[in-house]
Length: 480
Image (cartoon, rainbow, N blue to C red; front, side):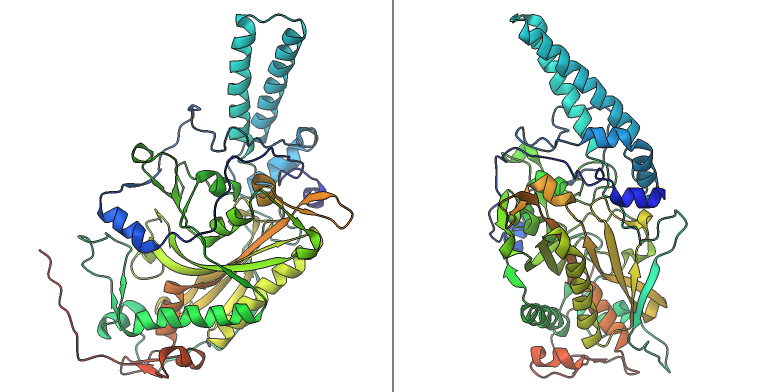
């Protein structure tokens, strides 16, 4: 019963939030990754904020002065225990009881200021109270904005729940010879360079050469053609985006576990972050807009460079599985509430079709509450079989974020009756290039170390059917 109440109440997604006008609308233009590389080489410092503080600093509130979420605190106060249960099951760090206390403190100060102002007295006490109200407001929002989205009632909900298998697709590859990893295959074929990059980029980086670089372009072109045929519209988005867009998407730009690279504010006139996914730029494109219901759903995609700090120290660090920069094709949709379930199914269907055409063996998983990020109401992961590790590895995900992001970013639509409502947003990975290359190399390897190119990619590689070792253009690297 408690779980069903979580589904029906209207608190977790800032469902009753209203916003004033944003000061800034992010323009939809491409910031070329090459220009970023040039800036980095010219001495531009990128910072991954790895610190946290219990003390509220002056710039801790990430949104602009004109952006103030207006939570339905009556609902939060009435359903505090249920909200706390949802936070606990999602492994969140929000303290809803603290949120309620901070709210009461803010309301008390506002009433005191209002009463003093209505008396007609303007003295030092009013000035002090205004400062206290502002401080209390910032402290309240800093705590309240950590609340996660609701959880879909059909998603695995208990802390010990494993992901629920939705589908198992494709044929698992078998080999009658010792299986090589993508690293060994790529180095033997001279198409991937991972070693000896410390003096250039550091760890978790790579070069794709020759056929591997062509494979990257082939995967992108194949994916784009399929998305266009499914009615998606192409956009190019910025790689540099302001923190308020990240935060509006439910991605923290500060704290111990952030994956976001930030530019050094001391050297720039504003805070800017490098996007870890085109989802941020695509959400920013629709930010502060009122669409017509007749124009929904909006289905768009973008090809972008993705930058992630990736602070985990797992065995996956070596190779292409977990890297600091990579190319990805991302799908993003804006819909009404009634359309969102079908759009979510469509995103997953597109992913399944793409990976089936590529000949992959993969499983579709309904992720449990404790594996959901703050904005996701429901999330499906797709994991492909990776022979060298003898296990499945994530290659894609799709999320229904309901109105969590739209209420923070003011993405709205006007109904046919003239009412303005917050839209629902959804996103899904169509192609994360390094992990796709990893999977294709390992699943299509031959005894002699060559790689068979999937048939659907061959037209995008000038008819090439396999990757074999080149005898020309070999470079040898020596540590200095």
